[in-house]
Image 1 (cartoon, rainbow, N blue to C red):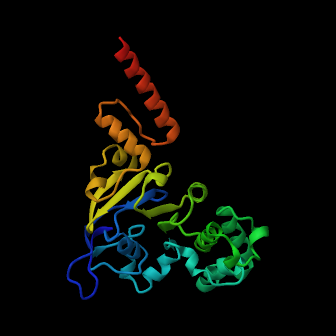
Image 2: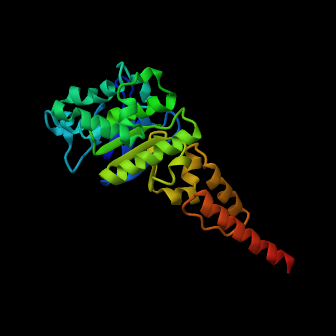
Image 3: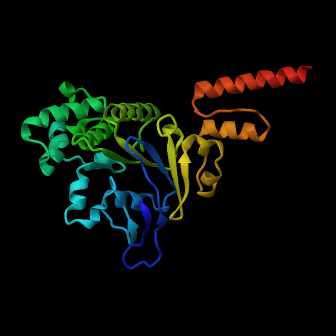
Length: 284
């Protein structure tokens, strides 16, 4: 994305202002920002649903808007999972819902549909033999979410854009879904862009973060560095996840902590070791 500005028709004030960044193949990037920061607009630009008012978007060095069917071609390689994607389910069988994208896009012959459907259901932790023939509207909320994501994975996009993919799920469902997506990424080398306002659950998976604040890109860098030095988060009206907040508050009080992974096991050990050290020093 090169110096992209976007204004909605009839509104002279840009919702995105001079945005530039590059995402490498196979990266997992978190796009962070409050409601109204421009996240949804940026996602639609990345998928070719909107076009920049100024600037360029290039995929593999090519600006799809420069050719007649450029974005039509590239959309087949970009999977966009909207927030609450289960609202888009419509068929009376899971397999029919999942295979719809294959039929609509015509990218593989019908003889491959079953294999693709089975593979995408397995990728989201649903047994094909148990779920193919079920009515999606009789599934639990978490199962519906997985089916809806399988509807995107079925055409095996090279780029996967997830808009608040864990919204509305309980903690266990969120954790399991993210682990399944991470396994899919490792297996396929997929590029993932996660749109969220809460980075805590993505910290074990994403290595990089982009922060949007009032339409401006105010941070582009390492996610663990952002958690350790969170000024861009605070300026954007966002907060630290609970574990990172504990580390941040303790470091402000002089505790020497080097937490970089922000996972409970490593942070617990660091805090315990520092507490023992401080206790021994106070006892002298």
